[in-house]
Amino acid sequence: MTPFALPCSADQVIDLNHAATLICEATGVQIVDLRGRSRAKDVARARKALAIIAVDHLEFPVADVAQFIQKRPGSVSRWLETPRGSFDRPELVSRTLSLMNDLNPT
Image 1 (cartoon, rainbow, N blue to C red):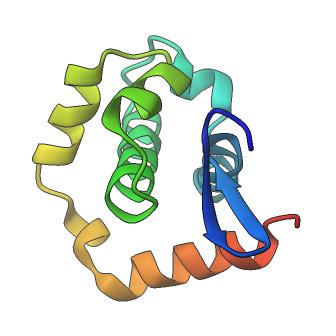
Image 2: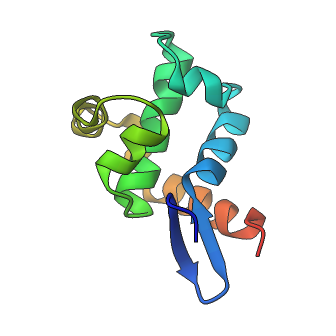
């Protein structure tokens, strides 16, 4: 298992890189942008999406997400504390997690 991985079932693992890749594909942002200094709205939205999915739903520690995207843990925590808009919709999160499980290589 990689340092940034979480078992989802007996034969599947979703890691942060895979989660970030799927979120980047959905938002049109590059992983390098997530790790960069950009404050553009689309990049900020993608970072927040990754934080919410990774911490709240995949149960990664905030520190691991922060290290993966090269940000401070306090920044990731702040993204999680701000209003989430559509990320509070259970059907959206469920669909995203289902997609991640379906596309995850075993």
